[in-house]
Image 1: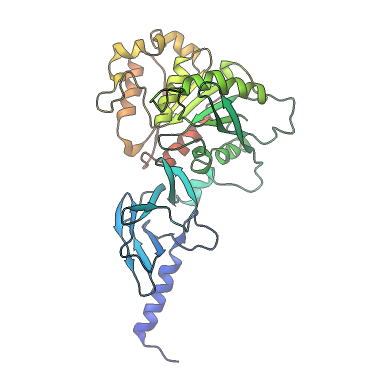
Image 2 (image 1 turned 30 degrees about the vertical axis):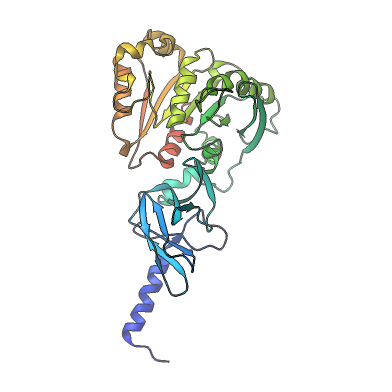
Length: 378
């Protein structure tokens, strides 16, 4: 059978284009779309022959095009490297993509696609051969503060079950707004990051406790009103009684991302008897009302009075706290750099970290955890 030169070229270029596309790592088994293209654009499909219009919402809305078989398709603009939530919309209904796994984010379950880094850049948060893996447990508990049953995720490092005489330091790690206790495992790969770091001797074996930051005292309208009390009265005592922890402030750290960073600062700096390591990723110290335009930390007089005056005596602070860590994405601006500078101006030592070419998203926070974890419990 003979083909014209133009037909051969079409077949050839189609094959080259298909080869340059890589299925997203979050696709369900045997699902080929979404696909990441060579230029970091993403191609999506959705089968809905009776729909009049389908929209992809990924950063902005993209109107999809339907073929004669009822398959809708669209290719986005090139996307930045990292993790991106998205959804599909038909009319006023917004829903998850049935071709991919879902993640709790944006206050609901969402679809997600990841524009992966070069393999050499991402191998620190991907499973490796011959690396011992820890375990992640889902632990139900009763909160007397919130008067409800709740869930936390607890990571224990490789060897925890075998080394029954060994005790471990603890990192309490919080998610961001609109997410829950599952975020640091399913979106953040915290367990894999620590498995790899511990295996390489770059981080100390530690327990990581991940709680839902939405914690309400009965009768309150504040979604976070019970968080600090719940952590102090319910969570930390339970973890210390249930797991082989080193129960002292020198072996206890707290960190979080975005709103979870604010919670980590409040918990860690407001309770000097409990924590000696504090980290915030893409989140600021909040003094008074939350305001991005005129944050309270920019007033040194307010700053030295915050958290019962923990910053008032810089020598004491720098002696008692082994690490105050501030992480941010390069594309997030200079707000947290300003915070680091203002703290330095009143004599407070902090470590400032910038994730290159990333914004307010999970790649920034994975990198921040990777860097932060290496500085803990040395």
